[in-house]
Image 1: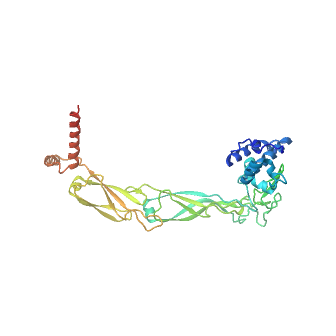
Image 2: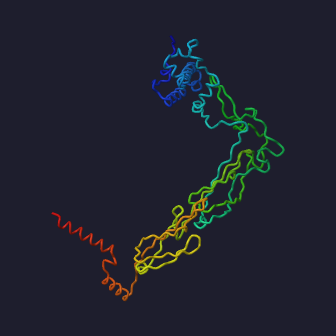
Length: 379
């Protein structure tokens, strides 16, 4: 009979533990018992081997099923269980995610000649509604890190070249023994680039790039909206020592307009009309975003707040041939600063008015009268 401790007990978990719980338990114990965390304590290396063996078996669905049925006998030679856990190359790769948590190696997997990519840049640009309607080509000037012309981006003094890093042999990564397994990390000598510079370029101090003002042409298509982002590939900062350049992102914002409010591809505006025009009907002209004039007919009896739709007079839809609409809202303006004669005429008009001329008001006050009449008759 095997004298080994139950794998579930070794990892301090229940038999019903799921994959996430199993991994969490192993990570916690590995952090506690790893030999590098406990130098000079041989018992820790033994304990770490035990929890590593338990995790390697239980994380594999087939191996876990065999263990649940036969126990440790499933992996002993001659009992049909196949090869034991083992700690070869497959073991090291299967625990790479755990090792990254233990030793902070995440994101440091550089390769030979792994040159650093330049940073992306952001440029904020404000345009008018008219410019968003028609599109434009804008010229912008930005300070940006560009490839050093003196060394052609190598970072080495003219006439010299970078040499292969002696610490990693140009691989950009070094290996280090950690107990019974080997860890691989970014070379600290060359920071993963695989090369070293003995004599840096005087113009760029070995970085392979210098800061200059760059003038760029930006094409803004018709129909862009507030918050539209335009990407210029490769126009960001140059990479360190010849690395690829980043990108430049243009973020657009629209200035407020004195007449129009925008809603996606539609435009809205408010136009005041006189009480007489609203009552008798008429027409007026409104400007359109395309610099033309549009006539809007107002039928008699138009109420304040009514909207009129003018098809195709809105904004273009980005990267299509469709156009939005323009909506004109009329606001009936109440006369002010009336003369005595005007007041007399309005008073005469009021006397001659009936429910037919103001049906909404008549209906409302009838409803109010009925409401209070009903309440008065309620016991």
